[in-house]
Every structure is written in C-alpha cells, then in structure tokens.
Length: 247
Image (cartoon, rainbow, N blue to C red; front, side, top):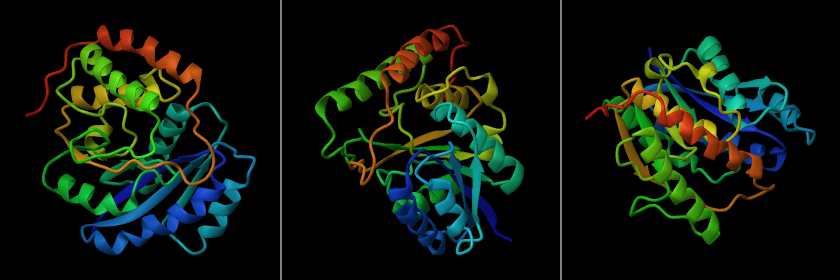
C-alpha cells in the first residue's frame, strides 16, 4: 500500500489561480509511484469565492480537502493547514507550496524522490546557481537574499541559500517533533521560524534549484507588517539553543 503525500496550499483571493494549480498538482500524481497525493487548501475566508471553487473541484478530485478559517496571516494558515493534514490525511510527507503558480508543480515528483532517499527537508531554492527569479524586482531579490543571510546568522543555520523559500517538502515524523503553535510568527516570518525548528529537530536538509516566476493572477500579500515581524523574529531565533546540522 502506498504512503501518502499532502500539499498544504494557503489561499486568500486566489480564485484565478486555484482553478489552474489544482489540476496541475493532481496531474503529477501519476509521476509519484510511492505516494498517494492529497491537497489541503487552507482558505482564509476569501471574498472572491476561492473556497466555493475548491468545493466544486472536490467532486472531481476526491483527494482534495478544504480547511476554512479567519484570516490571520500566512503563518497561522500553515499551522491550521498542517494540523488539518496530520489529523485527517495522516501523510508521510507534507509540502508547503504557494497557490499563485510561482511554484512549479512539475517538481513535486523530484521532491518525493529526495524524501525517499533520506532527506527529511527538501527546499526549493531560488538562489542556487541553477535557480532563477525572472521578472523579480531587484529590491525583492535583495530583501530575500539579505533575509536568508540574517536567518542563517541569527538562527545558527548551515549554509543554505534560501531560508525564506515557501516551496518545501517535509517528512511528517520530523514535522511532528516541532511545536508549531509555539512559533510566534503569524505572517511570512513563519517560514524562517519553521526552518530553524525543523533543523533543531534533526531534519536532514537538501536544496534544489527552482524557477520562481511572477504570479499569474492577483497581487502579492507581502506587507510592511510582515517585514517588521520578520526582523523582530530574528532576535527570538538568536536566543534559542544552537543548531547542530545533520550531515
């Protein structure tokens, strides 16, 4: 009997993207022979009808699930979605992925192959030599690169190239060791906080290059408050116990 893999997909006003990305994700199921693929859409009560579209698509895709709730930020959505997945889907591996088509679903099988070969955390990096960020404004790229450097310093992490990436594959047994509710981050800073928590919990990490293209529909949700939370969160990382990277 196959194991289970689950993509956790946070959404807010993503009706234009969700009707495209869901079929693309499930289209990769035939390329993943070791796991049955599920998707949990975590919708923050989008006023554009994203949740209703997902409910309609659930009749076509029986492994599609929906968790709706109040809008409290990306971090809170991931906490809710991961908890929902672990309780209801019981996956062996969990994916973090954006719903805006900036993350290519065609890479999901490669993530699974690496997870099957002993890596408990696979990160899609925009900044490895073979990765790229076409049409990414220079200041956004600079923010991401500086952010990665700061997370590595304050979080005492190994030499990773993309600590703020939102495209990841995580073994559920390592994820279960993390105190997600204890992570103070509500917004985008959740990604760096979770990364530190995973490494502290013994995750064996590998990065793969990804193409991070511009979103197809809608607008970026990154706000000034998210950036301020990221900076304040660095000091919380600094005073946690040192990380011993898994080799």
